[in-house]
Amino acid sequence: MGDGMVDVQGLTKVFGSTLALDAVDLRVEQGEVVALLGPNGAGKTTLLKLLATAIKPTAGGGRVLGEDLLKGRDAIRRRIGMISHNHHLYEELTAEENLQFAAAMHGMRPDGGSVIKALTEVGLDGHARAKVRTFSTGMKRRLVIGKMLLFEPELLFLDEPHNTLDQAAIALLNGYVASVTARGGAAVVATHNLSRAYAMADRFVLMRDGAVVHRVARDGLSADCLRDLYARYAEGGDSPNAE
Image 1 (spheres, rainbow, N blue to C red):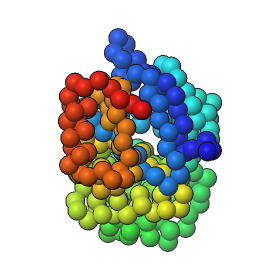
Image 2 (image 1 turned 120 degrees about the vertical axis):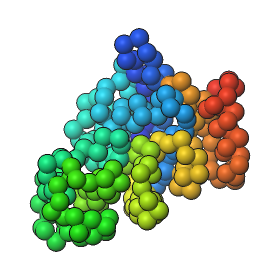
Image 3 (image 1 turned 45 degrees about the vertical axis):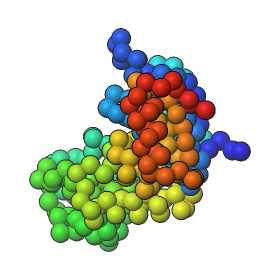
Image 4 (image 1 turned 135 degrees about the horizontal axis):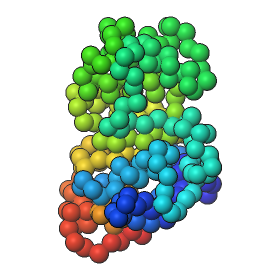
């Protein structure tokens, strides 16, 4: 077995006196989608931020895309895509300018046709020259997807990605994630929406109070069984079983 797309051990994050993440191990292989499941405060977003190098761990480490989590931060950032509550968009730039700038940050020089094609695929071609500050939250999420279409990241980190999206945009996002995994990439999705997670993930990592409390593969697992496990481990008080 190789390094994996994600291979981290003992990731811990402390904010002041608060233990936000407690010695988490995670491995993600090529071609798979892993869902982080848990209620608010479970540590899902903190784990995603650590993996995306947005914040540094208090303890622990490992590799993302073969790069050291601490020493290879710039290299990791060039190869990942992220959807989060922070859209990383420039409000005073147009949709078209945002994509051009994002491409330049990844060392690309796309022609205007490539940018418009990406905007068309996410249904924003009619808003190409509108400033992003005029966009709804759902439109901003579509633009983030368009940005990723342009530079084709190998690894996706998605934090509650379906929030504020209509059904067409949800189908677009799910199709995009499937295309990334089909070409050998991977995705880590943080959500508390069990139905959405069940529809797209290969494995489920249940979290509570900053720790992994259970892991289970989708093979042979019904949606009802996943709900039962979530209630038992993520919401309940059963002892962790992180094997």
